[in-house]
Amino acid sequence: MRAIVVHEFGGPEVLRLEDVPQPTPGPSEILVRLRAVGVNPVDVYIRTGTYPFKPALPYIPGSDAAGEIESIGAEVKGFTPGDRVYTYGTAAGPVGACAERAVCTAPQVHRLPPRTSFAQGAAIGVPYATAFRALCHRAAARAGETVLVHGATGGVGLAAVQIAHAYGMTVVGTGGTDRGLQAARESGADFVANHRAPNYLDEIKNATGGRGVDVILEMAAHLNLDKDLSLLAPHGRVVVVGNRGRVEIDPRQAMSRDAAILGMTLFNVNAADMASIHAALVAGLANGTLSPVVGRELPLAEASRAHEAIMEPGALGKIVLVP
Image (tube, rainbow, N blue to C red; front, side, top):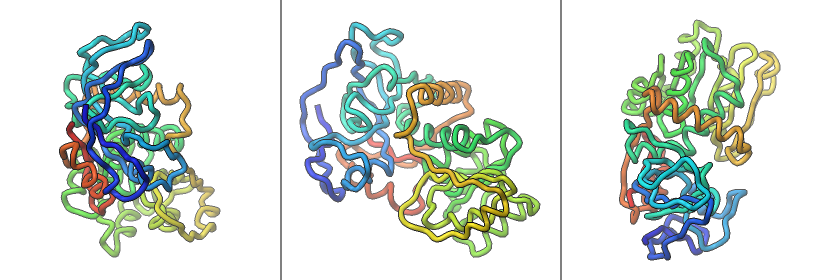
């Protein structure tokens, strides 16, 4: 089978399309024929070799995918060949999905409702689990609260908008393009602001009647964290979802509000919490409240281009590779 293989850490050029042996599932494993593979910023960080998690070389990148079950091990229950599924992770860990097939453990495989395409299924794993974890577990956001998704046009941002809207929250979203802001509106944002506009912070404050927002999901803390603190309502919470550098903040902005700054990574989620997250996501996909936005589909051979595009400003929705 064909797969993207990384033999050395480095730039996008280290992503090579190669023929590799087809994997065979063990007794408790599932072989999935992949129809779409999602690309995430964390895949880029791992590829560079600078991320805390560093797989042994050579490795196949990628964690999110969707397709059909091809075969199952003798001990697997609840799945049959032919089932449509999406995956988060593989038996090789948080890598191994950029290929025509992948072996997964049963907890890594989740049913894909008929209304959800394979490309949309490949957009679920990291983005939707991250958004759900940040919003519902870390921030403990509640219906009736106001949530600012600071960076609402990418995969995680649009997922967060949809989840917050489905849970009865008032949603404010920011983005840098008209197309992205329209996607945020269509995903459930009640108010949107262009973060390239010089007065966008005032627009957000005015939209809340001067009170501020209860929760902020921050995709670029190195740019926005200090600004975020000034937008919080009393007892507000900022969850740092993404960051690419250091930032200086004024702690008094947090002190005066009894505010909290919370970090998160999916690598810290235990098995029970992860099962809970995906149970909620599958239900949302099935009833239509969650509908992943796919911005671009590229052939598997163009994985290097996908890794470049995912880091460019103004990305809309999820970038998906098609084996």
